[in-house]
Image (cartoon, rainbow, N blue to C red; front, side, top):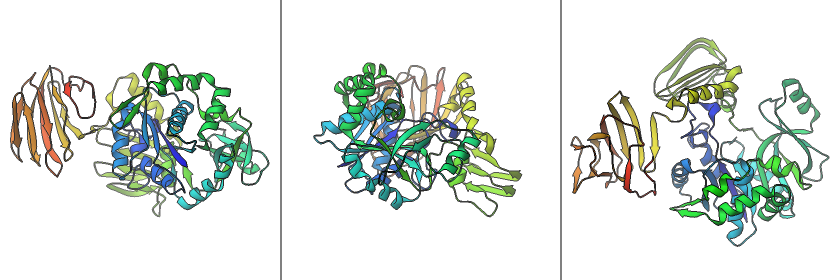
Length: 471
């Protein structure tokens, strides 16, 4: 049995402003019509003997994961929620503990959720070729055959080949340009993909040998986990005490059973905007364009429009990213430093580092159209059959106008329906709920007014999604 373990804990800050803390890159459709997470899950499902995936993610992203898997008509084996990020070794440890609890000792195929691999058959053939090595107890990492002297990736040095795999001699950090050229020219180095294959029990054996504190904390956090709807929520205090470490450092650099399998495919971890330009389709001038874009005298650039027309004239080697609330213009040679912009936004406590104007919720989404000192206007969309929590606000009143579909409204002791062009008023402190009883999305305009309009002014009394009084 082969269990795909999909790691979906990153924030993708180098792809700001499209990728943000609340809606990071693995949930974005960057390579095709599906998100990176969806492509990763579907890629693994083509492997012989593959089960439904185990997804490990930040608890903030739990409903995004669930909704994206649901849209694929795929039920995961588990969605494990990390209360805090502790890197890849603890994430895989809790996935291994869960898989062993199901009664077998499966092979685990560890896959980051944010990779682009365009050659599906080559990927599957490569993984299939080393299943026997994993069954025999080897811990396999997949090294990408380098196609250029890339300085943005770590490398794996392979020893003499032993059949289809080679022993791992060492892992090396991101090199400078000259060193990267030497690595590629030698033929002994591969890009470190962060993908692994091993038996669940072997991973835990080596973790106990080399990083026992990680395993002890993960055992405790998993043993006292709680079920939360379709999610498995790790015990916060125990997991918080877990040391943070990667699989490379915790095990692979220390074990005698680490081997590397070359993976010769077009691959990218989309670690920067220039990486996305490299894997995208290009026009005759070398430009990769998404959305409503017009270019003149523009070469070798990546231009992305999400809301408005973007036009470029007389520029080369630029990254131009437009969203509803932010625009990034950067030279391709500087895109590794986009993270510094995010850090500055955090320091200045600006919301753009964390959220988009449009925010997704388990029931649908809302788009903040306009805001000022004492009012805010939102475009709210509620999915068919979904409902918001039964709630009240201490500081704001709300006026709802339905523009599409039918709303069932609870307001105090009243329950009534609203159709298109009908409206209602929710006074401050009034218990209320919004539901969509229909078969099409419900859309309405909400005008909030009051002295405090932030999302933490929500007191929930009943919620179908198990949320507390914070969004």
